[in-house]
Length: 249
Picture 1 (cartoon, helix red, strand yellow):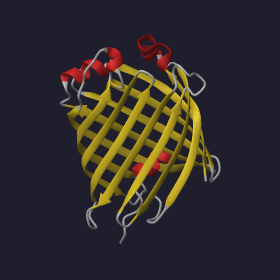
Picture 2: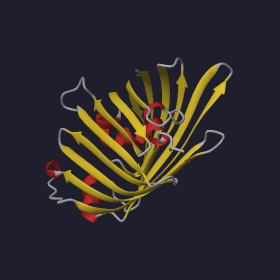
Picture 3: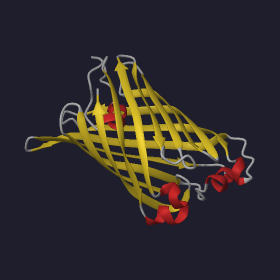
Picture 4: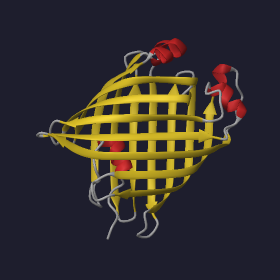
């Protein structure tokens, strides 16, 4: 029996259950990132009320699956405009629930850029009640440009990485919803990197809890609670609420 398209990848795209093997999808989403006071006090308008537009897609077959998105932020502000590219892939290890795991994540702002490459193993499974669970463990390689901050970080191996994901679709009356919760953890990171990136402490994490209402087969709306601790550029905790509208082709 062929494995289904990895729900982690679809969750990041649609926040829905697995699709059949050989499936694919393409979607565009736009919305607002409304960061909380801890973020605004630290980053100023860099994390305040920031717009975003994202194109994302996923495909899968008997051999594995692939997810990718490209996101633009603050497109209306030339001094703040940023971009984000994320590519996640898994290669199935036989008919088991284990996979080879790889991810490349790039984030750019006018005064800095960072690319994280993650290579390792993952496990994922869809249960009879349509609950999807995934766990991945990987090594972390970083390439970054923090010269604006007078930092000469050469990059390289930057510790370990763990992510887990849970997702499930459900109905309330005649309305279809889905929930996704994922959280990623970084540890064993370089001291100079921690200073330049602003994360401060060795162990850091960030995650999202996403509720999506599927108004039609193509149109959906999402509410995301985003949080981080010693990660995403700030030592300590910060969080925010993101609002999005998505059209799936």
